[in-house]
Length: 202
Image (cartoon, rainbow, N blue to C red; front, side):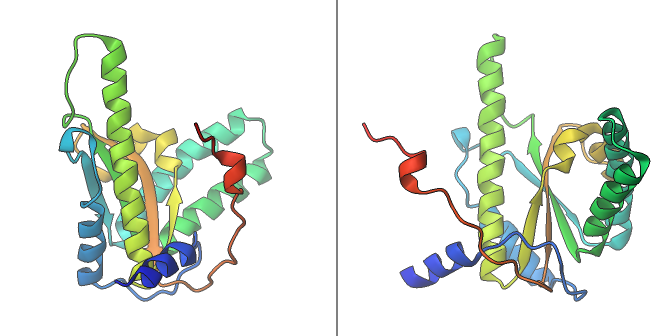
């Protein structure tokens, strides 16, 4: 890929929430997953794991389970019944209508073990960072393949629910749900904060 092609992919990636119904070919799925595995990782442990939800049944099951947990949280936040149901329905439909979803997980057994809580917590965060880097690669690869994608943090709020809904191995800790498909609508670019606002030089 020429330099200008790389920058085009980087700058054209969007968070897409509306997809065409056509499925994503298996060879495309394999390529974007392969791209994800080329991310760097702490100790080169490669702790990322991917649960590919290609069937509507799997996506519906996950959406229902996450929706139930989401509904409880929203009620606890004091939202009205109409507000709660509107948000839950929107989330449910978003997951179901995507032709493909990939659950990014952290394999908690892949890292080092330390006798003290402080270093063990740092090891956990290094694993989280490694999985996030793989997810970033996945999003860029999806964009290069002409796919739209959106990163959803819903599994972070109900990891046990997600594990049970998909019957994941217990050591696979859900980190994010990425929805994928050919975009029905590509959003306009959103502004980025200027470098001067987010950077310090020493």
